Length: 414
Image (cartoon, rainbow, N blue to C red; front, side):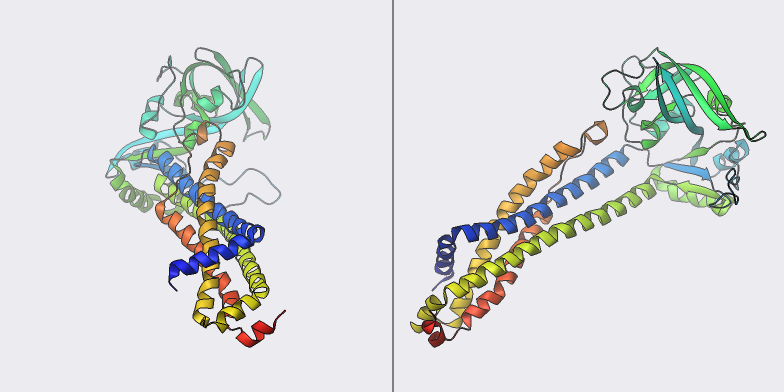
């Protein structure tokens, strides 16, 4: 008897037990659908992260001061002073290094914006506004925006600040006046103080994929130094190498000057960290889906074992008329494979649809507008082969059990 006849007999046997077979197939469908959907979401999220970081300048190094220790004084108090103070002397030394194209000074701090009776807490990124194009080459502004480089009263808002998610009314528009308040502790008196200044919105940035500026506001360094009481001490330096190929060389040169007394971060390092986190999280989620698939395997064992017990006389009859152990084994393995093929195929189709449904349901908002599941042929083939393989493995014991039944014992079974 050829393989097509074996599969035909197996399919007929499954049809005789429609409900039980359907429920077993459903178990495999659930497991393979989960694995397909989560594989697609993981690959899509990875592609989304790569796309977001591709919009950043690959030649930028973020330089910050390293703290003397990770903890403040016993009993509380201000944090320890940084080992290196980022000032114009440091800027000049770094700017003189080979392959350094520019050094962008920045002040940063938490501020409160007040507009039309509303207030928003956000981050200020105080730099030369023209340097935004160095940090985020693809940056775009809404219509009517203008960059006033030397205007100390001009402020540029990110789209998230100007149009808070979930609010129908904009927080601020171009040309509107805002009140900015900075709260700090006076190092001499230890008292909490406030500095306030009025600004006029000169521009609104569209989302860039750069979290540094997508969640912040920008005004020039003169205003930042005065409002944030920095006294010429920068919070961070953005060092632009001549191109992305020289980033590692520039980092090494800065390390030669300051060792570990200074912090250096590159977009590649950030991307690598995020990819490692994403990979670990995806593996964890897929392990949960694999458990669901294994449960489907247990269902196959139960279904086929019950089928063997119900068909003992049938097995005995086939053996009595000449059926060999290999034929009986093949017959039940074919049933397991049929369940696996149906379950894996339906599960993959359902998983692809489910991946898009999950993205549409949960990945909402401008920050996730580019997130779509990615279903790679290799991933789909892996899920399909794993589902079918586990089904065959699950059916191995019942098939072996059926093939080993002595025909005399089987024929005597009521």
